[in-house]
Length: 194
Image 1: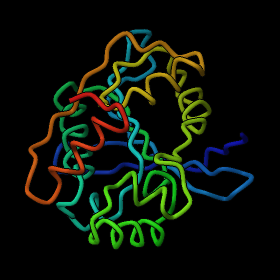
Image 2: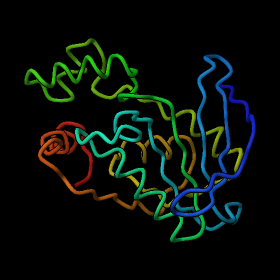
Image 3: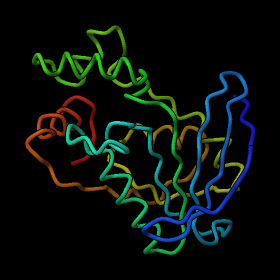
Image 4: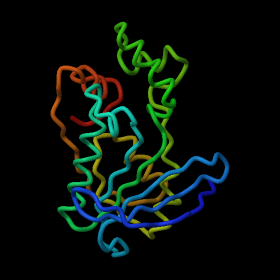
């Protein structure tokens, strides 16, 4: 996968001033970003979150998922530590895209769970691909990560790409009546950590 670094700029947030970095996949034109804070080139394992885009959760504050709260918790943790990296990957809806995600929501409204809805639409339960992480992490010369995740697939993918993950830090968010079954399905069917 060929990825081109495009530009960096400051990004003030409610948690502190991050630096935002833009990357573009050469084959598809898909754009991804990274947020950094503090000195990240140290050999010490870096606090990191690999976050897949969720427009409905991250930007529209949907209560159907826990994506927005996970993103915010990761940014807050990085700011508290004073050093870290967040990779924001543009692979909406577990890799099926925004419009298919809305179709999956409609199936969920009719009784399907999140995995069943993706399968009914002809997709894998989780179609996300983490290969984009390698050139982005290589750009920052990161070798070892303290990874904030509940998803063991991310850990396995990073190990397979040659990165060390000496620590896994689960991100716990508060369940609500709209996402309780979604969170249970992530644990029961997708193997996520509680």
